[in-house]
Length: 108
Image 1: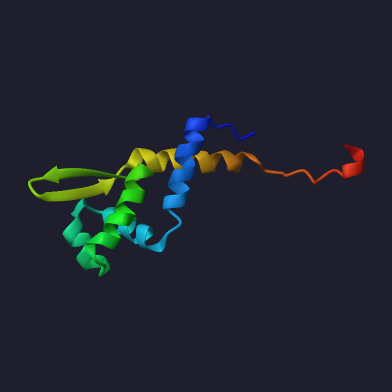
Image 2: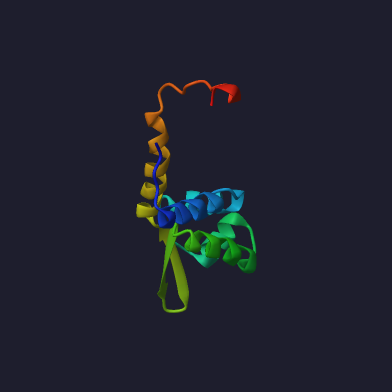
């Protein structure tokens, strides 16, 4: 049975919600190989900074990215431990090799 504490479940839900947007997936794809500043992300994604900020806020709330400030620039990178948490959550479903058929409601 899949067991997850309510805190972990909230974190997992935020993570999957953040992963459900194509722009946020593109951001994560760009961050797979290197840390990038907001201006570089805007250029590569061809979107304005206010729109990108909305998506970065969601990714930060889901703890999928981390940021650091260097002077006036903010750099973003993946938070790999959060991806491990989501991966571990999903891996629990691999345990279910044979799913039993439903019982008739009359048999319960």
